[in-house]
Length: 116
Length: 114
Image: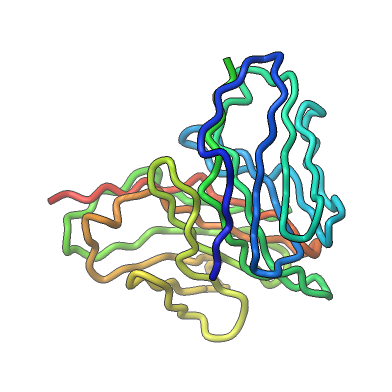
């Protein structure tokens, strides 16, 4: 089973709202990722969690706040977003092997976010 | 820093014809390379990957790719395309910072003509 689930599938929010995106995997992966994908563009990395600790933050604005409450869950808390933050938000997970070796990242279906 | 170039933004192929999508990478060490496919409004599905070993790798849905170090290329091929192959295809490379993000090419949009 290589499934990563994301909820909600669609989200519409105003610029003053607070909302959260949720990602879940039960593959025993210890690395989880958030990517942002604008229309007709490739995904861009936002955050990486390794063993529930934030290991990479690609200079993302503080209105995006990630959280990894346990090894299966990854949240992205949203507050005071701008219309230009409208995009498809993709979650992925992978094994996190020692020694810097890489493993395949498996993606969820994404949450399509519209900020009004 | 690593980078990926997909020189073809759009490719149109007739159903049943062969397909080759180009990918060139720039990376200082042995690259870890991937091809993903994305249907409209969907997440990314892994087609195949290259980590080491045999330079011709087989993937799902009848796709294969060949790693050529001398040309810094990792081109995706399929001998006979189906209408359901119409999608966006991304080539990607991953760095070596431990768990690291993928760096994607800009993608190639595949159109299948009947």
